[in-house]
Length: 477
Image (cartoon, rainbow, N blue to C red):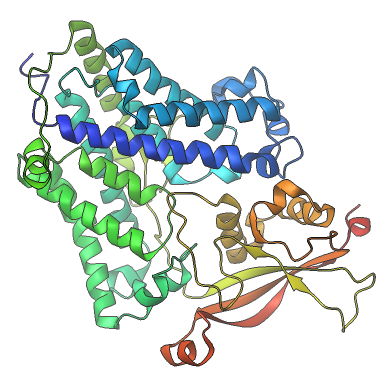
């Protein structure tokens, strides 16, 4: 059908699905590697306890039928295996109904995890992955032409992602309007990357250029996604370049990479054929009638469900990173409407002394991503997501974020729980667990160029307050 199929985006669809498969693989590996101490039966926020008294309609998940740690691991590793098959292109070589079923299963498995993930999965990129993952079911396989309607729905997601982020900024912190937010943000963002120190030390006029460029990309460029080519492709290219800049400047899980993957679907085959020694195959079959009907019905449903997210964009009380249904079908996005000016870090320490005295020697636990050791350069982890590290950043902003889980975290350190210790970069008590654990809040800042040359340190810090007094197993009992 001429109005339904388009032969100009076969390569773009291929790259979109390959990129999405990588992100799915990463997401399921995160789930498999981290769930036991976070969500398992002996975890900080157990899934079994969460499910008690909750109805399936409020949090659709396969785990309502059965939960055990072994079953969760099976679901996570099944998802990882299916994502690997998609990455190898094997799902798209299947007949269209089976290919769609494979992508639908990926979506359903990850939905099951997100809907029981509680605070550990309360991030906007979880809903974004689910929304984009469901659209992938309806983009066709390697043997069919990409459906135009689904490609437009992908652009609609990218529009809401970028425009929503731009609006939440311009409506929020005044520093976005006076172009000064990046005086602070590279230093105070949740998880700095290896280049964040350099970004922070850029001249302040360049920081203002960064913010102005961000506003242009998020508030103006998205409207050009719906223009004819090459304008739409040019808009997507600007967004991709901006997202790569964000990838270089910090760790934001797979948020930036999903935006890039969405942008790839907008670039026409002519762009890729001019850039790379590849070309789209000829003789691609038209979509079967049943698939046309399914895509049209699905598009109509998405259009209807888009009312509330679209209204939210226009609201002066705009919400960010919100889902309007438990299936995460059409969501609203946005980030960093407010920028913290000061970086605070919780440093968790332990001791093997039997009694705490002023002379007690305390040794610090090191996390994988969040700052701790002043001489340790921030690492690059994205698109891999360190869930505990991110929640520690929120806890440093307000202790209320830590109330449901921090006590359980400390108890597991006192127990020497291996699963919990695997979430950390360094355990200072390899032989036996500590007798006491405490937590203190420090103000962190990037060193100046002179301090960096003199000391080799990336960070400087000053003590602010106790976050948690020394605790032992006896006291916690």
